[in-house]
Length: 145
Image (cartoon, rainbow, N blue to C red; front, side, top):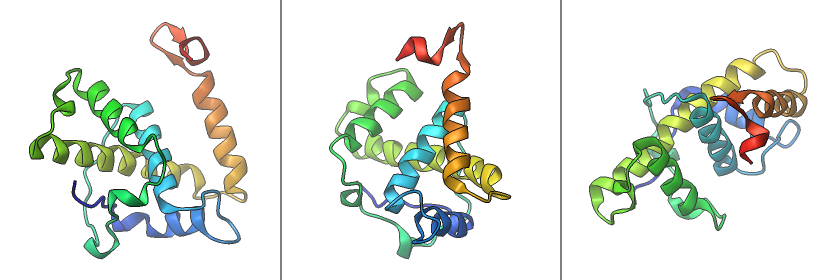
């Protein structure tokens, strides 16, 4: 699987979210995973505009047991097929690109939310509360959990 990239326009946000004084997340991969979840929840993907290939991360950086499962689940839900589960290079590329695009959208959403933030942690908590109380179709999100 190829290295995971991010748009360079988010570097300041990522530094803020992982920084010693203001950091909410310990590692960049956690920011990207959270952002991809936000992007998927919003139902929006955004192509990466400009990347710094030197900052691309190997998937081994995503040190959580559920990482691969998250990728596959994201792709299956997005495509409504089981094709992403196939072990071929084209599907592997689709998995990474999909994750990158959802994460990119989520980073834009976070940036908008946090651009005037005094306390990123408080704003992220309020964002989570808002997201959990929104309706999905005809059901409350809480009913789906």
